[in-house]
Length: 187
Image: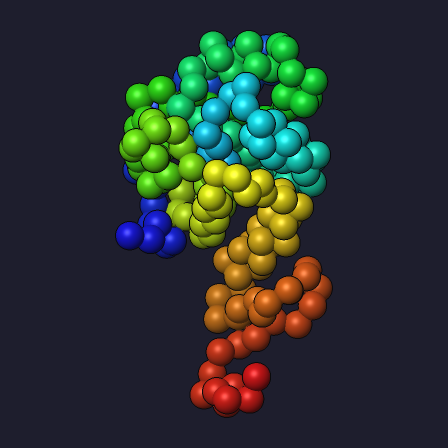
């Protein structure tokens, strides 16, 4: 069942952020744009490359009013240990959410029940807590965080310009489309 257009279910969790343990809940997603990036496990192979890449995009995402949350089924203690011992992960400034109960992974439908690990899922959530994009990759396929910038810009544009849509490869400032009977068969 698709989560697109649905408000995320309520949750509470612990997280590691900037040298501290903090509490995070679904309420923290309200009032701003959010990227939620699920990954299988700390101290693994593809995951640190993805999270470091996400950190490389963090400043640009913040400029767009977007907060970033990474989530795995590890504990917040494990997140801290990984942050303290990995060159790639030590760079992370965004919030690392712990989901050892698998609650959040189930809410977002990315839990591999057999392994007990999250799949590689990326979600863009609007300021109302509604899911706007979903991307889920197989375990061996890492993601490229640079694509999140254009997706968030498009989602923000559509939100503030009702009746307009962004075509494929749309970049900020380019033409959009206004769906109508006149466009049918002409694109």
